[in-house]
Length: 203
Figure 1 (cartoon, rainbow, N blue to C red):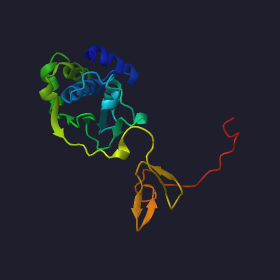
Figure 2: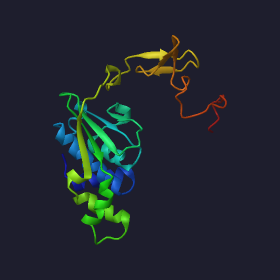
Figure 3: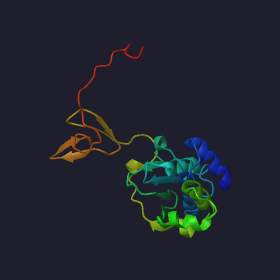
Figure 4: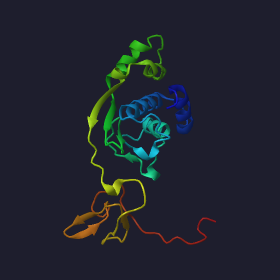
């Protein structure tokens, strides 16, 4: 694996700016990969799946370091709102969940007392803070379904309510009928009306 500074620079370029979350994400990814025996995730990309638990800066950093991507199905997003990620070695089944500690925020003062601006203080402190103070680590078992593996779609179902095609076993069965998750009531949106798109509508 490349050195921390190189990985952080690339991550910041990918994300759009350098921030404390980038530092946490890069260190989290480096630690997680090392603990499951993956020395160079960019070369061992087919061995690795990562679950991120928050839609913030650290997740971009983790994707940048590992090369895992949603479109490749090697990066999984579970919206728990927790600054944490789980790293799974597909070859060995070994997995670890690495979680950022809330105490690290206060500890930033200890490692960068000369910096008064909170954001700059964290940016510097998270670079040098011992891993044991920055993270908690758990060995975990990931129940990965064959339908969640990278590769071509293995299963399709058609929602009996709206007609949407649901891939990879994500359908819900209610009273014997196939539902997509929105039709089953698990939706982030409220449907208003269906539009008819004309061929020249964007010209």
